[in-house]
Amino acid sequence: MKKAQFLTPVVTAFDAEGNLDQQANRDIYDFLIRGGVDGLVVLGSTGEFFSMKDAQKRELINLVVSHVNHRTKVYIGTACMTVEDTIDLSNYAIDAGADGVMIVSPYYFALSDESIEYYYDQVIGAIQGDVYLYNFPARTVHDLTPEITLNLLRKHKNIKGYKDTVTEMGHTRKLIQTVQSEFSDFIIYSGFDEYFVHNVLSGGNGCIGGLSNLYPEVFSEWVNAIHTHDLGKAATIQRIVDKMMELYEIGTPFIPVLKKAMVLREIGLQEFCNKTFIQLDQGQTESIHNILQEIDELIANHHIFR
Image (tube, rainbow, N blue to C red; front, top):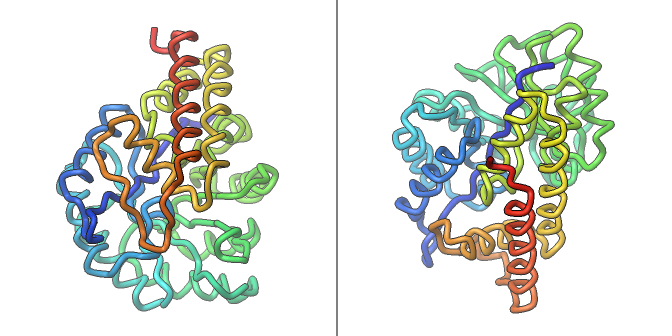
């Protein structure tokens, strides 16, 4: 079994005017590092990269790299809508000291397999550092298939891993089976928290899941349970995470729900988001509060931190 990991796709803290809340972002990084996660993914989907100006992205890259200062791994989402902008931002992040960049393919148009491979060929060949592919078909309206991935791996030695944000674990399993006989060190993460154990048992490396913004200590304990072969504890935490997954059902998109939950847990940010996201109503807030209470009770009753 491979070494399991759980990384956090970190939320981005803003102030009321839409500027970066630098201190709140530092506090979040510290909270996650204390919680024991295996790395931070900044400017991913949960980090609202799609609504940020280039100058803000660069400001946040400088902030996270300097503040984390090698205490854990830092990966930066650098996808832009053009090849040139993606290359520029990726190399900026690498030069700033990021451990790698994560790139989702251009969204809006459904691209052919040939177009997806062509896009990544242009981008990856010009990036001076490690690259992680990011597949999110629900947002890009096309699939970065296992076959495309294998083709890319055969051409680009700086591709190190892949995040598969899909609802069907069978897609991730096929990816593992397709590439890892030839590229045994290729890292494959699931994008939904609940698939962590399934991913690892199938030969993957773990998960990059948004709920770890809320309870990083639970997810690091889950990783430890796998490493110590404590399947009873892993199963207990699976049930706790299954309860956490109910938070995804409260609102679409999920980011305002996650930020509200972090505020309720007093993690140290305000709930300001992309201005296109509507504020949660009282009923949604009460639902979040109730689920958090149930999660806290499950954690306390099962004594997972003994």
